[in-house]
Length: 146
Image (cartoon, rainbow, N blue to C red; front, side, top):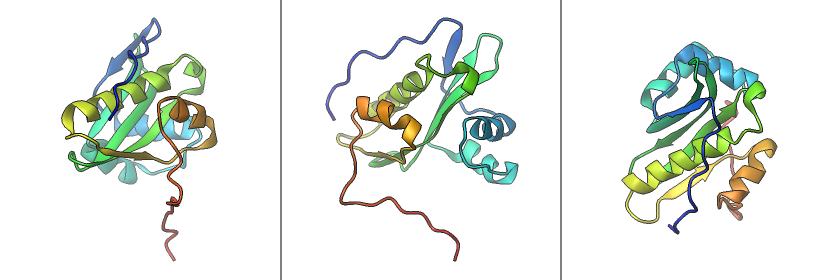
């Protein structure tokens, strides 16, 4: 994997923390950021069993942004749940979270890890800027339960 530019500095008043949010914080931030709603029962294993988490907290301790990695720790890593509270958007918090997660993957994985994510339109510019490309001809798919 190519070297990356110097990490973005975190805005004043925020702390980058390499740990998961609480289940309640996770559920609430997903909803506030416009991600699909999930229940606490769905959230609990995600919080507990992800390969890595990075969150941004305000100095007062409230959750401002988050992201996590699902993976096997060797080759496959999927970035998930990139979200920022609307009141804290446009301050580079998502970029800091993603850069931290990518740095942790690079530090832990053998060369050339396979790093993926599903990009909603609001995140495309960030993901493009950090080197993510369309996986064509691969098509992202999800099971609809039928």
